[in-house]
Length: 249
Image 1 (spheres, rainbow, N blue to C red):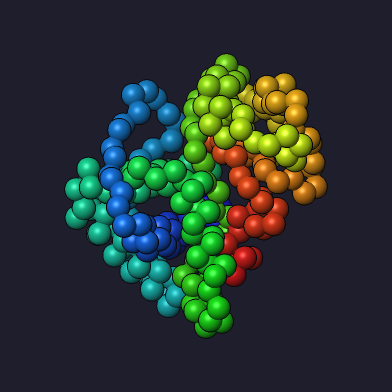
Image 2 (spheres, rainbow, N blue to C red; image 1 turned 60 degrees about the vertical axis):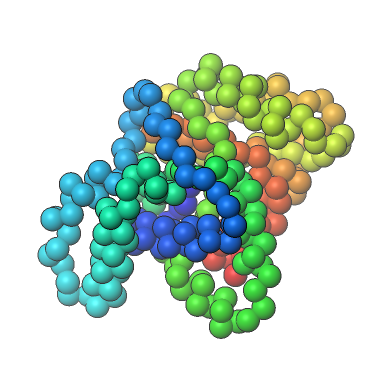
């Protein structure tokens, strides 16, 4: 999940796709996976939307920078259309929220591990010009939040997902006295509140962990947009500028 400026979503999509593809090249082996969710979300596959709206983006050409960005996005769209769906590695999804874009991983890599590796590589860059060039390639993007778990927005589904997946896979083995905090964000959904989310998750946490709201070692990140809930356990959330890559560079 990537945040961006309002009205910059289309430009950000192309930038994110190129960065993800470039970072994927660092992995010597991975498998493309394509398992379609059997159910109804109120978010849409942007590959279909892009094809449907392709003819409606050919008018405004007065701004030179906008024209260049449209060409970049057109190139990215063409590349996606030429790639068989089963071989695509990332799938863009319409979040129906301004300033927010989402890419679904279609490779057998965990999003949090992928982003950890990506941040380490970026932080290891010594050349100032290289950093500036990279910063320019993601200028329309802000926070890059990896989400390992996705479920529907109901109290029961969120609780079940946390108890059956997040807790045993990411939290149960943390050392005693590890500091932790819960961070919640809600967009375009009035059916649930932030206090409700905290009340779902907090009682399930091991008692040997300690709460630190200012500088926790790990953050349980819960985000909701429309009917979708995403969760992840993120290390060094605040040290990494809330995963704002531009700020890290």
